[in-house]
Length: 164
Image (cartoon, rainbow, N blue to C red; front, side):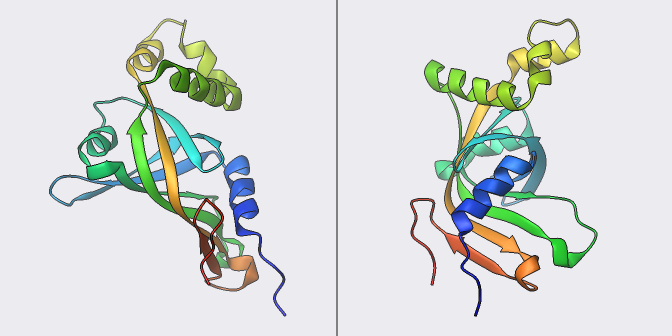
């Protein structure tokens, strides 16, 4: 008998313990692009800083409904250890000052080194001042855990509904 799998809790634990996500976007010609980003999260809402002129930011702005995919996984040398989260959902640039402040607090709380960039001299400070904050909202989440057996995966909607 297989032990019960609390996929939402496992997914949130992985989001807590890992620090790099991969964001996948598509341009207007259907060409895929992926980039790695540092992120903070509030449940299944992920936040990151990005230059609005970057390729992925331009794709988000142009995509109908901001449709994107995102993964979060650690680095493993043995397939049996692979665990991660795959998500599809929507991404958007935040514009509301209260939402921006809350996201900024999450990001600087998780990555204290970010605070030094906002008042300091140099290229990093200039880059941070022109950066925007983006939010990903997951609509479907899949948790992969090969410790349960090769290819073990379960999916759910963040509102709590699970796949059979």
